[in-house]
Image 1 (cartoon, one colour):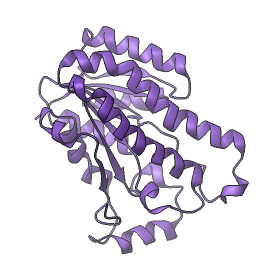
Image 2 (image 1 turned 135 degrees about the horizontal axis):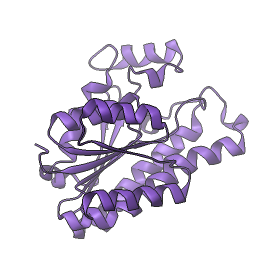
Image 3 (image 1 turned 30 degrees about the vertical axis):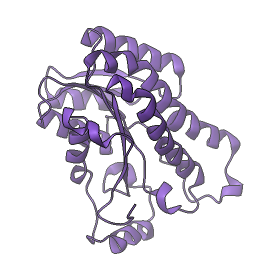
Image 4 (image 1 turned 45 degrees about the horizontal axis):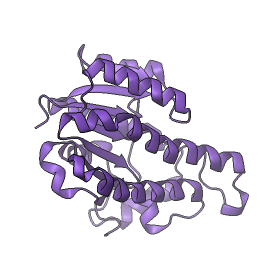
Amino acid sequence: MLKERTILVTGAARGLGREIARSLAGHGARLILADIAEEEGRAVAQELGEAVRFFPVDLGEPASIQALGEAVASETGGKLHGLVNNGAIATGIGGIPFDEIEIDSWDRVMRVNVRGTWLMTKACRPMLSASGSGRIVNVASDTALWGAPRLMSYVASKGAVMSMTRSLARELGPERIGVTAVAPGILTTESTDYVPEARHRLYAEGRAVPGPQEASEITDVIAFLVSEGALTLTGQVMPVNNGFVFK
């Protein structure tokens, strides 16, 4: 499905990002991985084969994003078929009432999750346009669909990602660049170890398909969304949470 397509995945060193990379590789994509966790990211790239490239990036720093864009352009000859904006801050920001969130913490979440997604898309746009079939998949969260409490900065950031997806779909559609978003719930990965057991239970019991959800269960959806056949879905935000939220 993805042979001859080159795809960049941010936040690829662990958790969902790592599983996305594994899935895309399995579908035949040529991969470029990026993450702030350089050692872990290089290990994932090595696992997936010599042809997989890894570049470090700090999504909170515009210069780092620009450097990644330049590296990807050099690596690909200026053509990129897919961008998966998965990199985000999630740990250490939950369980806090909205009126106790520190301003610095709020700003950091917005800087990485929202501004980082915008700037990463901006850096990749010329390459996606040049490919003639560019696809962008933004990883949002179903917390922004049901309003998870005591997690307001993260919820707000992922709500912004959903809105950006719709706006970008209209702006980039004339270039035949499709833009979609997925909104998973809490997944069973080492990246969600910080989530209280009660919240994991809430999700497991509230899903239409009860039980925990593995990251690998949603990666084939993302693989389709970065394929040539997904253009008709542009602008859509898809809950991929085994029926915890219906949109």
